[in-house]
Image 1: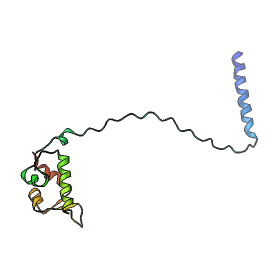
Image 2: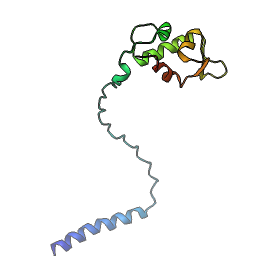
Image 3: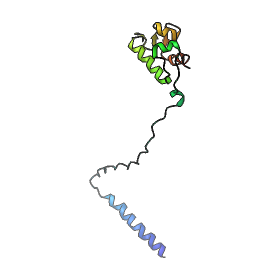
Image 4: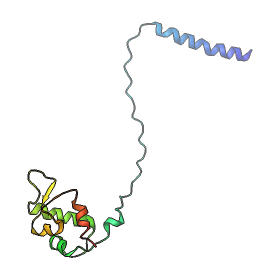
Amino acid sequence: MAKAAKKAAKKAPAKAAKKAPAKKAAPKKAAPKKAAPKKAAKKKSARKPNAAFMKPLTPSAGLGEVIGTKPLPRTEVIKKIWDYIKKNGLQDSKNRRMINADAKLKVIFGKAQVSMFELAKIVSNHLK
């Protein structure tokens, strides 16, 4: 009997709650949503470069004329070649993807014009 009384007590407010909306009340304004609390961001360690790219390599004699003879990592070699290309205006004016070789670069490239996408492949042949 006690359980039946509790169920009846629970149902009674529910019925009363259903009757309340029957009245026409002013439309409710949407409550401003609260921003979810942000979790503390994990500190990411600085990205470590691949050791193979950072290993100093000795340039060949032909490449040494352009970038210098001291050993440099691959990434620095490519940067120095691009500095040389831009300083001497060797990028093709119509098709910017192509690099026009001057006398020094022709020794490295082996042809008069090279695509910028071939550059790393060709330069790797001149590094030890």
